[in-house]
Length: 144
Image (cartoon, rainbow, N blue to C red; front, side):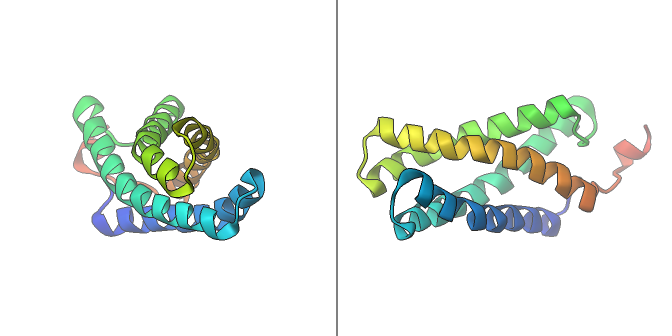
């Protein structure tokens, strides 16, 4: 299983790369000022960073308990990404509606658009991260 230092590197690199892509793209796509999307993106990224750390820790513990291994198959990666983004969508919806002074429906559509980007990004980023920084062997995975 990954250690705390690795989990922090994972969460921070995930969010920094995403911010560099999503802020200008979101401002362009929604026709909103870069500053407004930047604030939403930065606060959302801060919340998402905490969620990322907690979620991945809980997910790995659940995998370890249920199957005795934290290495993810393709199906598990897809499930992992969907659950992560669904939870984050529920957390961020009220903030987006409030900050941008838009209806919950408009905030939902905006958030779903961001979530669609992040769904693909989460899948690709985590796969690449696992290739660049492989999961260390644990006593349970070494027995297999």
